[in-house]
Image (cartoon, rainbow, N blue to C red):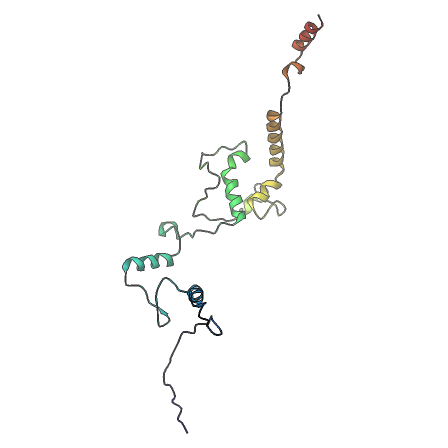
Length: 197
């Protein structure tokens, strides 16, 4: 009886899937070698015995360390992380940039005029009113919306202001027509008399 040798300790081998099945033909050797090279995953760093070994070069090591550090503002700003920009957040940030157009009675400092340039680090929160302002500056449940854009669209006073401004702009941009056909009080009557005589 042949003796089975038992392995003492741990052993580990990387298992790579076999990508090519069947027999090789002589004419397709080059094409199969290309497909083998493209199919096998080769990371930039070398794997030794299937394990990652950091590079000896200090520049490459620093690059790897920088990639692992989270993108934050730093200790002086309490390590505020850079948020991911969603479409809702983009709309809200654009509205904040256009805030001087929204309310006619408030004036703000001139900021960035570029609409699509957003700050890298910012946070979004909800304002919690104190109990003493229950009747004065509190939003009711019906007035609360998910985003800033929804709140502004549902505000009645802003709706009236927006409609008035749109009407003014449309009146300015309407084609005037021919001036001599416009009715302008006494001057139009004089022109009519001159045409008759």
